[in-house]
Image (tube, rainbow, N blue to C red; front, side, top):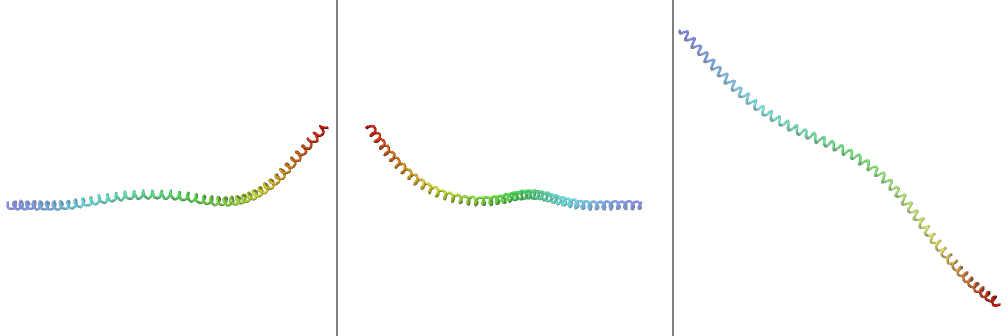
Length: 166
């Protein structure tokens, strides 16, 4: 019985030791699990923060990309407009040079025509004055001839009257 008691007591110590070890391992694992759980929660919150930061950066990148595309489109449009305007400017400069040449030619022609007109007017005035003198001369001759005709008619009338009285 002593042995049985020793065996039972040894068994009891073994069971208590096992329970204490089991309780120690349980506390150790529970503490380790809490630490791991807390670390997991911390890492999860950091991951969520990084994920939200990444999402905001992605949105910023998308906006930047859209802005860049818009700027490239505008730049291309402005480049095309610049090319068009440059072409129009060159054409207008050519047209201007042509028109200035034509204007110079037209001014020279006008000056020459004005000189011709002035000469023609001078000649016309001279001819008009000459014609007026000629008309005056012929009017005087006509007046003289009319007077002679009047005198001749008077003489004829006198001659007819003298013939009729005879």
